[in-house]
Length: 324
Figure 1 (cartoon, rainbow, N blue to C red):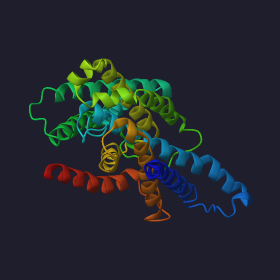
Figure 2 (cartoon, rainbow, N blue to C red):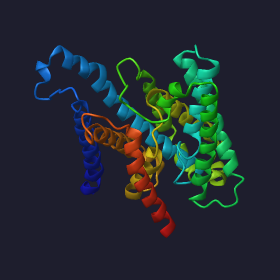
Figure 3 (cartoon, rainbow, N blue to C red):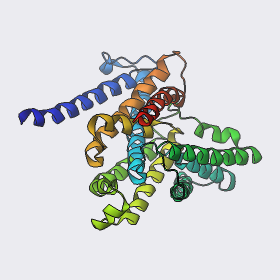
Figure 4 (cartoon, rainbow, N blue to C red):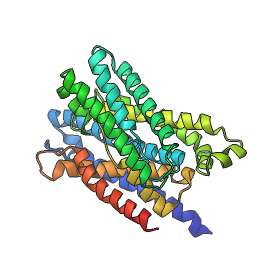
């Protein structure tokens, strides 16, 4: 009995320790040498680098990784498909289209207005995807994300056409690849939207868990399925828009992390919510450290690193799913 009580505690403690260790590695990795041993003897330049870039970057990595992983988990729960995420549901692509439209037609708009427009497009695109997959007869696990990828590519093509047509390609290129290199103390605050969004998801975790049983069962148990589905999609769309506006498009996190966590800890949404957030943050921290050290002192966009690692893990999950 005591062993069962200790095991989750030990697991959670290990996750916290790993998160702290990777956060420290992230903070003290970079071109400008900032040593942990000399933390209280830093020069003015080192102190400025630490406060204005390193710490905001690490916080951004933690918030983005955990949020993307949770969004993927929530979308998989709502669609009852393990390979659906903001990447494979057209959510990210729709948010990018909203940003392009805002830059073309509302170039003087504020960050809040751009966020609102990106959210509106992201929400609309995700709902179109959800409605579309309900008409598909072949609902094999692999078919749904493939349809989502094609849908996303169509939207991306429209975004590229508009960007070229109105000569804003250079201004929109930063949203094509995720990159934390430009994060500073003045431009990452939008990511703090993750806290209230995660709070809402945590409070509704029980209902989202029941929704995994299907619409008919959930309705019989008194769950307002349609309302919660709208709330869940809206939360994902808003979180995705905030991340894209801040750091750009980050692929695969919402697919591979929830799946890898569920392989070890089961499919109960409420129970794997926190581990998914932790491992999403760890995955992004690890990938970012790699992006800064592989060709040091130069830096590879983190989306390239995650694209390589994520595609391998995604292929593994696909093959594993097909073999069952």
